[in-house]
Amino acid sequence: MAERPARKPRKPHSAQVVRTERLTPHMQRVVLGGDGLAEFTAGGSTDHYVKLLFGAEGVTYPEPFDMQRVREEFPRDQWPVTRTYTVRAWDPEVRELTLDFVIHGDEGLAGPWAARVQPGEVVRFMGPGGAYAPDASADWHLLAGDESALPAIAAALEALPDGAVAHAFVEVSGPEEEQKIDSDVEVVWLHRGDRPLGEALVEAVRALAFPEGRVHAFVHGEAGFVKELRQLLRVEREIPREDLSITGYWRLGHNEDGWQAAKREWNAQVEAEQEASA
Image (tube, rainbow, N blue to C red; front, side, top):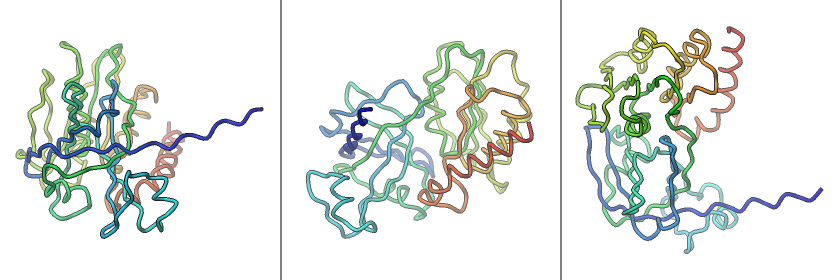
């Protein structure tokens, strides 16, 4: 049997910050553009994501930037750190890529960067990935998530055809975090306040009177409430796995590196527990 050829390493894209905008007190928009996006393209998925590359402080990488070369020539603690963000919008005509970031003061890596970045700064990233888009053959759509899922939920709602039946629930900290979405679907904004994250969202989805017919669901956000909603949808409502896009974007108490390292095992354990209880 002939050996399968080695997979060619993906080349990072390089873009420049075109402009930034504070959408709400805790949501920052960064728009990327420039000639470095000449080979970038995004398809029909509304949950497309990119992995931003943040270089180690004080480290200069050779140009042209080559991730494979960096991994071969630099110690691991000097490799760029990746952070994953959903594509809010991609305009192929003007070649502009829009990303929205949740900001929690100086907490984290990407959020503080997005809050302070200036037009002209160079940004490197991998991608896009993503696999979900609202299925036109579904009778209705369910979309639910927290702030981290808001860009993908908004993109999905804006992609729905006129007259599509959809129920959308987004949990945010308060009314000041609501956003305008270009869609006829009325979003149910759930204000968390001092309640545990995800509690209001789980209550709202559980209380929903599910319409008749086949649902196509998109549920993303903090892993704890995603686990509860997966139990509700997969086990109690018996929605087939293929009609669900459901996973934890992040997990309380973990940065992205820690969560990504544990995510596969976590998902397998949750799936096994819920299959056993079905």
